[in-house]
Length: 104
Image (tube, rainbow, N blue to C red; front, top):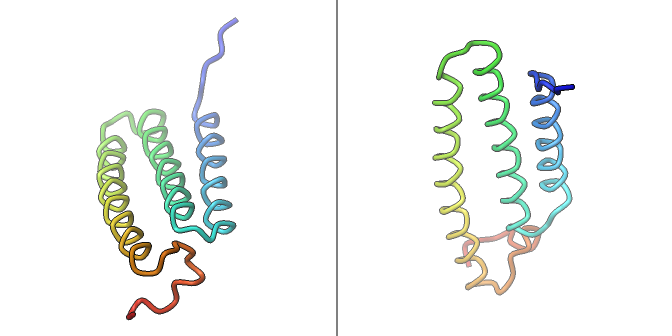
């Protein structure tokens, strides 16, 4: 008895991952938690891109887009962590609700 994974299996995993990222974004006030939620949502998009490229088109376009999203996510994480570090150094917290005015 063998289990073959099809497109619906990957779409369900991606939907669950995207939902977890959305819940993380909506429920967290911490900037690090928000960044983790965004990363989960980007990974869900990557799973969808590669699954559709594998099961629908059978070419490398989905893989190229997924690689582009990974590069974009790495750049976003580096810049966002630098911003969070700068906010923490100046305000001594990373609560996004308390970080309303960044002019100070």
